[in-house]
Image (spheres, helix red, strand yellow):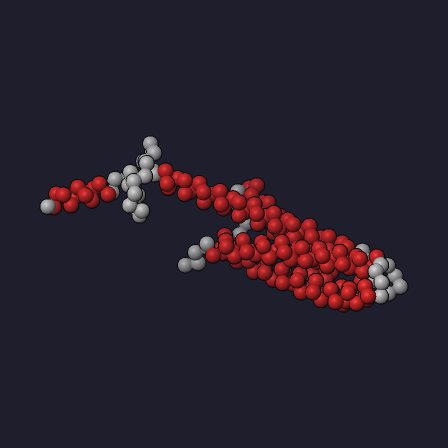
Amino acid sequence: MSNSVGLELERKASPGNDMERGSPVAATASGETEHGIGSILRRWKREDLIRKGSLTLRALALVFSLLSFIIMASNNHGGGQDFGNYEEFRYLLAIAILSTLYTGLQCFRHVNELSRGKQFVDPKTAAMIDFVGDQILAYLLLSSASSAIPMTNRMREGGDNIFTDSCAAAISMSLLAFISLACSSVIAGYKLSTQSFI
């Protein structure tokens, strides 16, 4: 009786059987299962896609923030058509500058990490900075755009001109930067959830 139990345990522990799923899996020459190698390769591809996707979204946010900053900063046309006369537009400009700086630094960090293969910051700290920073800047961008929209609409009631068109373009760029950072924040949240803080 004990001999048959020992043979059964030995059969289950052989490298060709997947102990967790209970189904046989073909073993490679090195003794590892194909299922394990395939799983590792899929995880590496997923992590690489997440890294590149995060960089792409932040680069888009950088471009949109920079465009919003440039358009609003150059929106001086005299005769009361100066962005500095309206606090809503000054707020939009300030947040566009902050967003440009933040996304520029994040893009620099990501490109450097991808090219060198090593990280500046501990992965747990980097995941937290990415998530919190993306959340804060995304909400600030949305807040600044939503504060400038009513003022632009009121000015457009009197007639469209280059000043109101420039304001609308800067607001649009801020909203696109918000969408990019909001999507980046979702990826950062996923990366944060995969970190072990114990």
